[in-house]
Length: 130
Image (cartoon, rainbow, N blue to C red; front, side, top):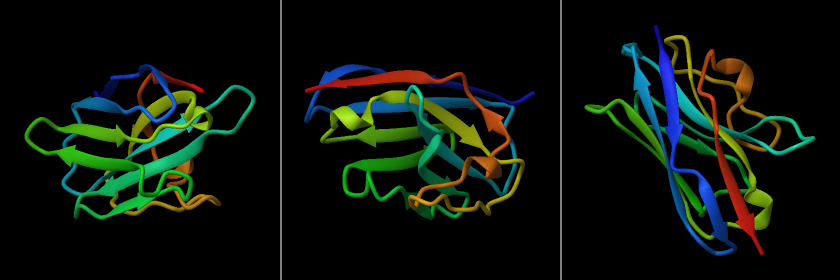
């Protein structure tokens, strides 16, 4: 059984940094993609960043240059380093993983599309105040 457990969310001021972590258990595909998504109240879920089993990454236009996604294989943990945070980054952040494929579709804003990911965590809240 695959489980994804996010941590690292919190409240920061504009310009601050946070590092999100996602511990994946039972996820043993050799080919895969994992990603971070976010959803603010009243808005659709948005793809933030993704990484595949070759290490290739994709970012939404709104976070390029500020966020960095990485995956640590031995620990099977996904990270999202978020710098220069803005109030518009406030949302619930979710970790997701594919059903054993390294391919994923792109959303309209340049990040990964949620439909390409089948496993989801429960989310961690990020709040950025101005």
